[in-house]
Amino acid sequence: MIYEHVNYAEAPTCRGFYVNSAGHKIQFDFSEIAKNFWEEKTGSKRFISDDDIYQLLLETEETDSEEFLTSEDVSKCYKLLSKISDDYDIDAKCAGKDAGSYCWYGVLDDGVNSPEFILLSETGDWERVNTDKNAKKIMKILKKKQWNIKFPIS
Image 1 (cartoon, rainbow, N blue to C red):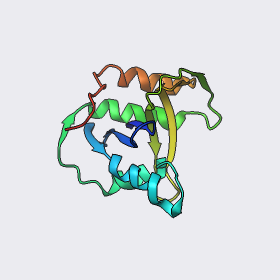
Image 2 (image 1 turned 180 degrees about the horizontal axis):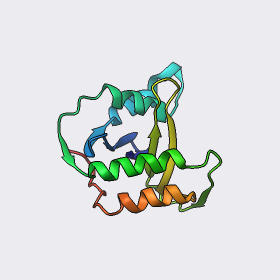
Image 3 (image 1 turned 60 degrees about the horizontal axis):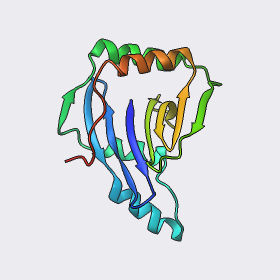
């Protein structure tokens, strides 16, 4: 599971945390990298993609972490994630807060194909909710924990 805040309104921002298979929360801040993507990538501006973030997370050493979910909850989340319909619906409305986006993603990675990012929930400029019953169950598990973190990450 990945929780990220992305914003390009003032200075490119890309930070948050991910939950590893042991249920530990590991924080990341790729804002400087996002800025480089915005300013330099192929001579044109582009946003840092989910695939970019995932690759950076794979290369990130898990140093500081804290327990976030039990191993049982991690297992439940991934079982539910694999049951989410390929044609899931997203309820969306523009909130226009100029706050960027705060998103929860589930990631399915079989090690063979490109990882599949499944949006579970988003707040900020847009309010989006995955309407699949399994996504809602995952968010119920995640909301049992105080998962909001204060930015910037120290």
